[in-house]
Image 1 (spheres, rainbow, N blue to C red):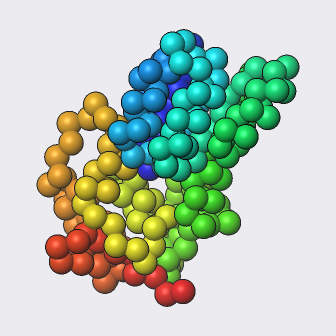
Image 2 (image 1 turned 120 degrees about the vertical axis):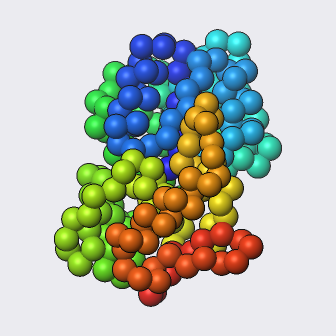
Length: 220
């Protein structure tokens, strides 16, 4: 899963990016409104963390332009604790949630997880597909209650498929959502990750849809 961090305070941006990376997210970070607008219009993100006090173009304007352009990725806005009017303006502009500064990193991670779950229509923190359970809080994956070890990229692929279970996911979609923009993207590695996951998961759980991509087959 891929997250865009937009924060002009670079130390805080780096701290947020590190926490997200350690939680197995692919992370892009920008530090002003112009770059934020471009990133949100051209990239594919599962969630966005948007500071409102940005240089060049403010966060509210960026968000309004995204929504006007039909960009519907979940957005968590960051705002100063006493600026209640910014919270209202942000929600009215199309934000899905807000968090006031200063904040605990665990709360930010919990809110990001919730945004991504809700966007996929999932109410619970645990994603289930047959005997496979992925706990979005801990990053733990089990098969028949036995934990399995996954690399960071294997986890990202599985998490994206679990969030979009029973849907056909193209290779290009996977590439967009498991790698940050500055990562050296090699489409062949997606096939490698899928092959590795198939060895660790029950047979026929990940289906290849010829010419289209992959589908995680789960009983409703």
